[in-house]
Length: 320
Image 1: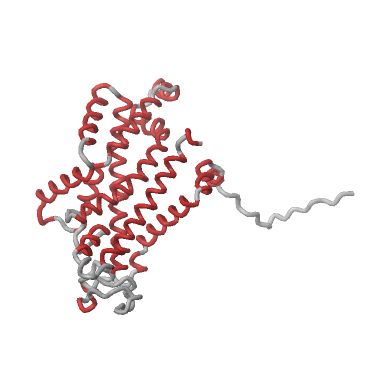
Image 2 (image 1 turned 180 degrees about the vertical axis):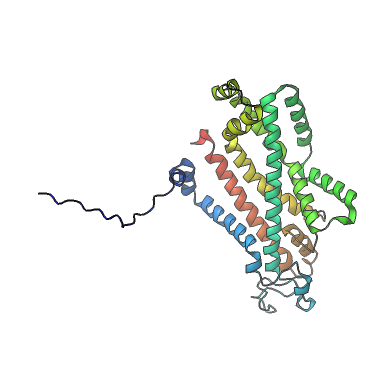
């Protein structure tokens, strides 16, 4: 006689992982990610940069944006491992007595904030115009694409410089640090929308002739609902690739503008501003003022670009 199986209602079973999480782990995208060690390293470095930017106030020894915490007696101290190094200035100080490591952490936060917000703005503009051009076609498509063609004839940095110059000529000395940050985001957003618009337009031209769009039109759904709810989700792959690559371009553009003196001021420096400040002391022997912000910027851009290259190949069905 077989023994009865006694159940224990109070026994807790391990909770099953959410369905979306299991699907993500079993996806081709995650499999491709696990196979590429370079991509995993790049993802880790990028995540590290974002984390230290978020927790900059906790990790830094001083607030470099607060003049009350700066002392000129601590200016131009060399890195800690050199003969003239002093604690707690691991990477030395600049001409204002500002800890270089703290300035990098806070400057990284500004650079990432401008880059992310610029990508969000350019993506929103480009996706909206691309959906409109591809779905309606005709004169609307022709007008939007001709504007895009004209903008493509100018480098993005020149467009950003033009918008930045117009803002400064209009507002003059009324621009404070936060206003300058908003101007940079606006300038970068208007400089990179074309790629989104052209890519989304091409995808919409293919998708709008499919049966599900015709069915949505047949039941009387309005055009904005069809575009946003049904057509847009089928274009997310190329959008993610463009956004990742444009994040690096946006950060470089901000750094270039700041290096040229048209970006963030010295009272709230980004990585580009720190490089511009340190460049003036390079030949005086204070190499650390420019070297470490430059290394941080190069490492950030490289890791994001490696992620963008992997994402482009992973989402390309021809390479699977």
